[in-house]
Length: 328
DNA sequence: ATTCTGACA
DNA sequence: TGTCAGCA
Image (cartoon, rainbow, N blue to C red; front, top):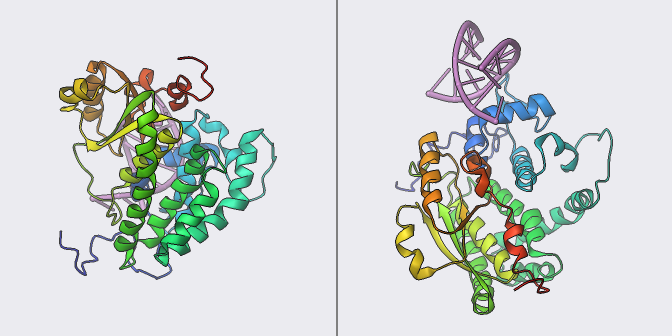
């Protein structure tokens, strides 16, 4: 546990700044993204999605960019796009056979190519400088300009992913990430407090903890799910939904407190790596809960086989409390 | 120990 | 999508 100079378990980056740095074998990528290794190979073979480099012996080596793309794919899948149709939606590297503008999807991909990367670089620089004023300035300039959900999915989460990967190996990585988490926390907490008072619907946010906790992946001070729940919570606040973030737990004790918290719905952010047994267990516990449950987030798909009838679009939940007062 | 391909349910 | 066999 001692965070000394022990670089032994850094299987992924034997040399901090060697040429092989930042390349990950398929198993590691599977853990990082929550996508099964077989699925990754299948995506590549059947759809030409995510073509990694290879070692001389043919083993796949995924770059940070590849991993970012996998996560981009997952975000499309979460939105209900079929895997066979995400190819054209991705930020294209090689010559696109047929650049078909599919309405807003293509428009967003366009923005993603031009505007976001520059912004991400500026954000990264602000982070590396511990420049809080600059960081908040950049955020101020863009929050409000776009719907927060778009900002979260197209900018903030990809940026955090990238930053996490880029910093791994740096001695000050933990300090930087802790600082960033603190900055974002205070920022969004302030909004949450205001929003919660006026919210008509109250939602309980819970990260599902795999019982076989797969330890911290890359030296993350803040667990990966914490970032995600912070951003999701911010988005919900922005949309006028009251949010209570309980952090990471398993479901066992939840029924004991539900009647006192009395939320309108439960939003669960699954983590990576559930065994089949765990999935069944979770399914049973979810079925026993007396309220609306939604699975959401990066790893929701890994649980979709478990209770697809509960996997509702977040937007559907929000539709009833949308601004404009359609109902209520 | 892990990953590879390809066939198959 | 996932599992299995048979290799490297």
